[in-house]
Image (cartoon, rainbow, N blue to C red; front, side, top):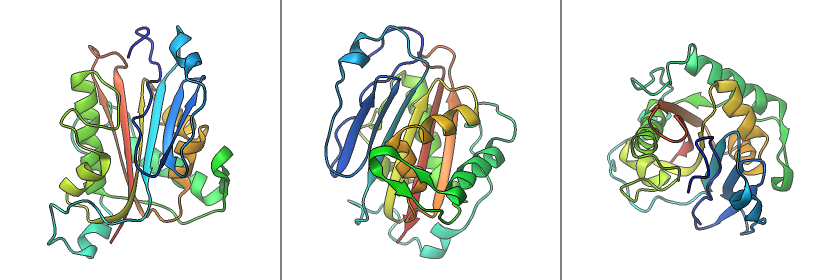
Length: 231
């Protein structure tokens, strides 16, 4: 659903055990918790919004299926250092800046609005498998010009993470569109309760982030952050 060529915020699709939150200031989020919605009329009526973000999280449960059942925990927990080609929006120091900003917030602790306050917690480690899952989804959104946690093939974030080879016990996903810098997207996520809670969740151990550009698409830059902890 597009109002103008300036990015705006579509609604997240409902997700089991998740909370959907729509903010008139251009954010939508769903994260773990009870179901609730704010008034969406402001989103429908808005003519110009700076950017779009959405978050999705699942509590600690087993995946629906494991495509990589033979993967051991050591492989899933290994800290990796690669970024899939074409998934950094040509931004300098993409991975390093992401990790610095994410872990700086986790080291300080944060108040995440209706999700409560989070104490300082452990740093996240970059993971190639999560970055691969994130890159797949950002490429999908950018190439097919849509904004949703559900892939064009019907996949959920959990499915994409599993198919990338990460055997998870818990996962979360933040997506965003239109932000031009790492600082803008991380600060935008932290300013929204659902995204903030995903970033601050102590149970998560690993993260992978992708940004894919397509000048022909509505939002031009499409961001995906996948977070998880292994089984």
